[in-house]
Amino acid sequence: MEFPEFFLLLDLINKHKLVASVVLILALLIIRFLIVFFLKSRPAGENELPKRLINTISNVTSLLMFVGLIVVWLSEIRFVALSIATFSVALVLAAREFIQCVIGAFYLASTRLFSVGDWIKVGESNGEVIRSDWLSTSLLEVDMESHGYSYTGRTLVIPNNQFVSHSVANLNFMRRYVAHSFSIVCLPNGENPFKYVDYLIEKSEVYCQSFSEVAERYSGLIENRLGITLHGPGPSVRITTTELGRLDFSITIFCPTHDAVELEQKITRDFLEVLYLESPGIQGEDKLDKE
Image (cartoon, rainbow, N blue to C red; front, side, top):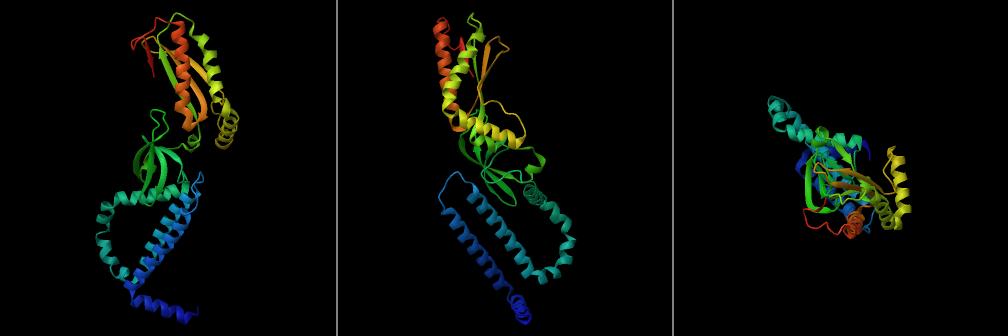
């Protein structure tokens, strides 16, 4: 394009700002729709790249739309700049939370704390990141409190300023494998409780045998990436006592996240069957509790 034609285009845009604004918005929306439609038409799977690209495309087109409208209406904005300055303090105070959220978005973009599809913990909230824009981040809540690792069905919307003022934990490695810990609490039955340790480890190894090699490789991958030492992949048992004098058998296994609860129930069932066979006098809720 030659320079005279370029200036002619600028003059045309300057004379028809409203039309230029509508064309700009429609063009960006159509481009975004086509790209998102193409990405969503791809087969779903474990790959989180399409979700991340969709989120990035949405944010980029919104930014281009905002910048484009400023450029189109720049001449009018300059005329009202002095008027805006008179109440800018009030405007900043009124939009303080929004400004903090935008700053939080830049903070997330610069630090790359997480991506769409990651499991994170913000304060007391846990979930999978499904969307992130300039003002907020949306999470699908994941049940971490009861160690169920399942979706609760609730969607959490976290303002981006919370990521600056609260600690953020990236739990993405827990999506596939997790060091799952659970406890079985019971009254002493007169036997040495440490004689049950080998039995619990043996049963845990039997149930974890089908994925032990994969678990070992995944554990090594996490250790190399994070520079830490994780539990496992072999099971472990720890015996302590509660404030009421009961025995607390704490078992930890490194297992697939979606199988954690099922494995916990199987190990607990086998242990209680052995405990009841050796101690037939233990009965009722006042004799045996499971935590």
